[in-house]
Image (cartoon, rainbow, N blue to C red):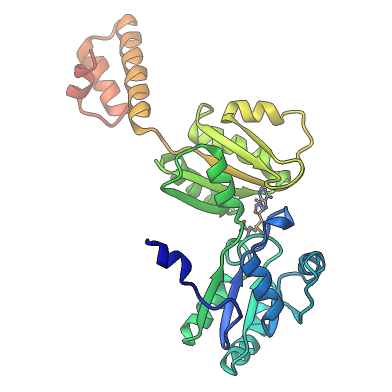
Length: 287
Ligand code: SAM
């Protein structure tokens, strides 16, 4: 990027026939950008998840504009009208209650429909809890997995938990405060209590809190607490090398135990090879 590319940008005023996906704050209203305010002020219509939430921003920044509700309950009915208005040349902004629309919020489906109709979308970037939590966690952030809310159905949930436990990348999860304790127990079971984790609570708000180190510490921290507020979890990926060293130590100990109990080296190795799905020679190599 050169200096010119920083200076040359799109027109500040909304353009006709464009859908603007506008990021809004996740707590601190001052996190909204000038560009977002300008778009909200000047588009033909703002489609928002909950008009009461969006009015808080509008009131704080003295903006008045037309609002229409657009959420998971009415998006199917309202999408064709929005597409029609865009085709007629109107400019429309989509906002969710907080953060980036489309990230566990309404916006994903309409973006895909609008794009398939050949209409341009412009995103006005804003806060996102996942990225804010990731960057403040200090955990590896150049490559990561965003899971959003985990599925509730046991079989789907366990499948994802298993995937998370084996993933070497940092994982970001959204969870409600009511279910945090249950999720921490599950993560402990699947990933082990010593896996690094950070719980980001109330990001950008007055009582912002970051609780870490490992899963066991975090479970202990929340043991007797009344958990309230919004929560994002950042979990460090699997350290494969460390994990395989730990496995080796456990097998070595099992081998010693079996031989102390009277088994021959050959019999103990054969048993442990089968149990750990390894070759007998790999067990021999451990000693
Ligand atoms: N679209 C939003 C975004 O870009 O982050 C996410 C919306 S999703 C419905 C709401 C979830 O995001 C919350 O349950 C919580 O997990 C997370 N979240 C939102 N605001 C947060 C905050 N201030 N601190 C921590 N987590 C937050």
